[in-house]
Amino acid sequence: MLKDLDFREATQDDLPEITSIYRDTIRAVNSKDYSEEQIEAWSSGADDTKKWQNRIKKHYFLVAEYNNQIVGFSYLRQGFYLENIFVHKDFQRQTIASKLLRIMESQVSINGNDIIKSDISTTALDFFDSHFYDVEKKQKKSFKGQVFDIYIVFKEL
Image (cartoon, rainbow, N blue to C red; front, side, top):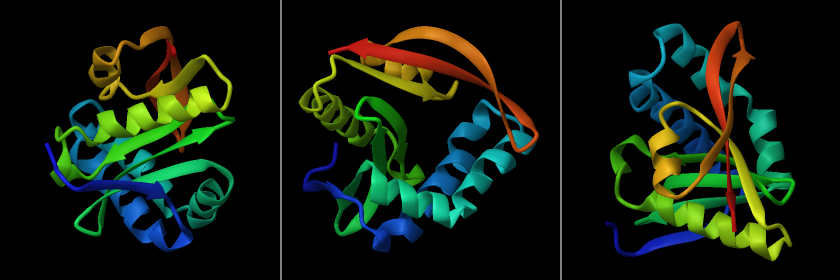
């Protein structure tokens, strides 16, 4: 567990670190559950700079920092829909994702919602299960010519 972990809202200046974490984490961590073609398609989502700039601008978007380095991020869409919890590949299993998740759950409550939902990967299933999320349904999602198993999970707050 890391001490001196800080959380703050993301800025446009954080974009290179955020997209790097996104790409590298998919390639290093999610590769155990997905094919090489799926990993390439999914990780290429980091290249859409305009989309990432928009996410930072429009959503409640947090970064986790350790020693002035961004080591994780997450954001909420529509005040209750959790998008992306990503933790740097070299900082896995150090409670960063759990802390980000708790902050996001609190923000959902502050926003006046009593349920948080998310679309998650197969890789993230055990993490969300350990935080008392239920699977609403499993579905297929197509992205850049690849089909992914995605789970919609939720938790009553």
